[in-house]
Image (cartoon, rainbow, N blue to C red; front, side):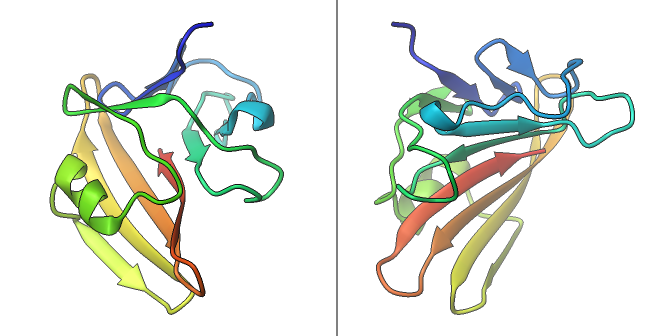
Length: 133
């Protein structure tokens, strides 16, 4: 079985890249990811991978994530410190007592990407998802 690669440097998940012709939705809840097209021309505009079991209807993403040419494996126990070690210092962050968020604007290979990373912090702290637009 091939490993699923979420390449943040390229804005891609396996063979799907942001900006490609998509459809309105082409995710795989069994494998823990969603891809959405929000534009009128149905180009892929968002890739999101889920790490917390029971988040919506999604299973946990078990693939690898490529950041700055390095391969990482994250799970629901991945900490803020581990994320900032991989991604660097966030461009923006907030904490509303229920969720903690860090945001990055990353220079990609072909375009810039907005990245949002969310932890659930009300109770047990868990990494919920990473979203790239």
